[in-house]
Image (cartoon, rainbow, N blue to C red; front, side):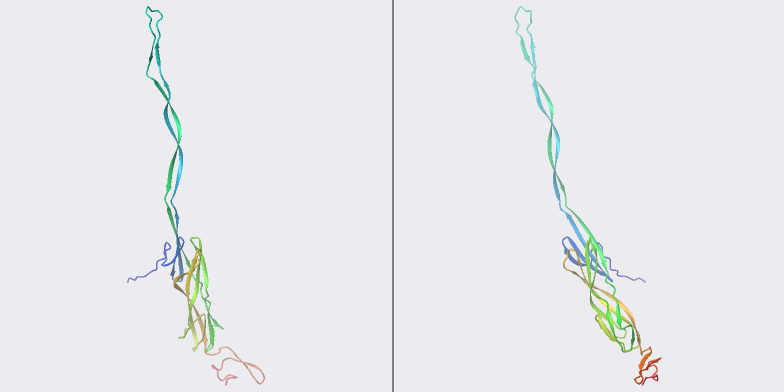
Length: 273
C-alpha cells in the first residue's frame, strides 16, 4: 500500500510564502507552520564601483651629446731644407662623446574596482503563549448549577532578531469558542453555562490568534493573512445531588443537624419533606 503525504516545505533563504513588503534594501515575509509563524527577512548591500588614479615615478634614461671634439692633425716644417716648406694642418672627422642622463617621469595609472552586491537572509519562528480554560466556582458542580467559564487568552508579544534587527510579533485573540461536551456551545472569553445531565463532561476551548509583526525601521505592523489556533481541554464533574453532608438549621431550638445523604438519595432523612 502506497500513501502520499503532502508536507509543507520549510522556508529557505527567507522565501516565506506571504510577502510583507520592503523597507529600504530589506524585504520581509511570513508563513504560518502549524502552531508557529515564521518571519523572513532578506537584505542586499551594494558597494558602488570605484576608481582611483595612482601616480608612480618611473626612471627614464636618455643619451644626449655632451661634447664635440674636432681633432686637428698638424705636420711641422722641416728644419733643414733648401726650399722653404709650409706647414699644413689637417682636420679629421669630429668625435662626438655622449653620456646618459637619468630623469624621473611621473606616470599616472587609473585603477577601477567594479560594483559588488552582498545578499543576506534570515528566518525566525515565533509561537504564541499557551492558553488555559478555567471554570468557577470549581470543576465539581451540582446538576443545574451555573458555572463561569473563563479563557486566559490576551493580546501578547514575542520578540527576537532578524539580520541583527529587533523583531516583534503580536498575537491578538480574535475568537474564543467553547464546546461544553453536552451538546451546547458558547463564545467569548467569559461564557456562563449550567449542565442538565450528571457525569463527567470534557469542555473544549479554542482560541484563534491574528498575527502581525514589524522589524526595526518599519513603523507599521505587517499582517500575516493566516491565523493560529490554540486549544485547551478541561474536565467538569457534575453530580446529580449534593454528595456532601447537608447542614440544616432547626428553627425551634437553632440546632444544627448533620445527615449522611441528601434528600434526593434518602427522602426519609431528617429535615426532608
